[in-house]
Length: 461
Image (cartoon, rainbow, N blue to C red; front, top):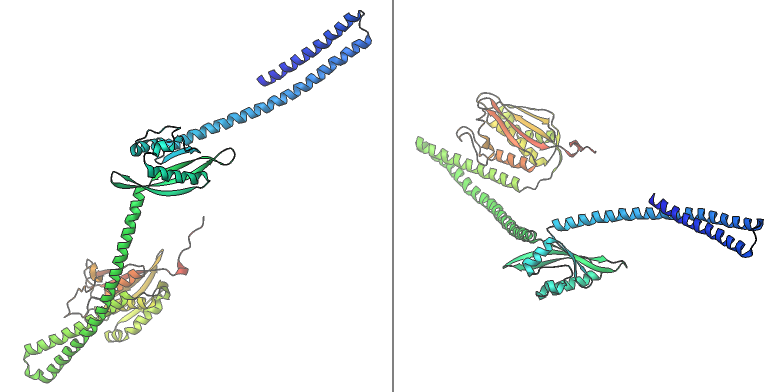
């Protein structure tokens, strides 16, 4: 409304002045001539008044449009100023709250802005109370190397280059590391009118990277040492097993010859000694073979693929056919799925578990063994159940190497078979455990991942 009043006032002044001029000039003419105005004079004066009124109206319209445009530009300017004020407040808040060092410089390397953190660090490191307008030489000049490095970086910045540089600084005998980002600030002509740099303390990160690099080097050396030691151990196991086999065969052979040729001349104690030597040699032979089997299994890379657990179980039963027939065992195999596994390793699991079920049977009772599988959310759970002698369920360490729950006089074995099962199941990404009751049999359970085609597909949002 204020703008509209100005337009009306200007138009009113123009109209009053114009009409007054026409009236007064006409009166002066009439007085000078000395006769009253005629019709022509009155029409001429009326035409002049009409012109004034028409032009006054046009002037009013133009002034109102002009005032409207000024109002719009004024409002836009006020809004821009408000946005700039808000942006400046935010930037000031960021600079005040930032733990990084932030500073801006003009083309002549004079400070134009900085944050409190920059001011504090300059005081701590350079003993300078920085102020706007100070030159880089005033801030860093007493540290020639720092000033030289800053000048080189500043020349690159004014050339329009943006980059990051890692710098170190000796702080009371300890090395501190700083990451400095340089960038230019364009002027009205588009050319750099100055620039900025942001300094971040990355000492902890650099030290962590150095520690990781050191640990990685140590780990690589450890892996190399362990690999070499493992190779040596494999060679030792191979040589030792083969070197031990020959003396054991010799001991067993001569013990049998001694019993055959001189058994009649030996008393009961002598024959017992010969029997102990023979059985000890046989047990040692079995132990060496089982250790070789364990070594071969743990060294095997395996080939993980989709395999039929039912086919693997059938192969294990074929390998155990003699033990099944001689023990009168009944083995029931329910339908088994396909799983992600190594076929040879899976056969070994079934063979060891079913073989143990046949071995640890009750006297006078034929073994009854059931093999089944149940699907879980992300894996298959297999079960091998028997009606054997069972054991105390607290003895979960039956899967440890050489762990035996029964004396050699009652049941043969070396305590390696279940350890092999545990290693294979863990290698295949599963878990193995046992549920047992003394005198009521055992159920060995283990899990294996689903086959790729059986795995649930993640839902899409």
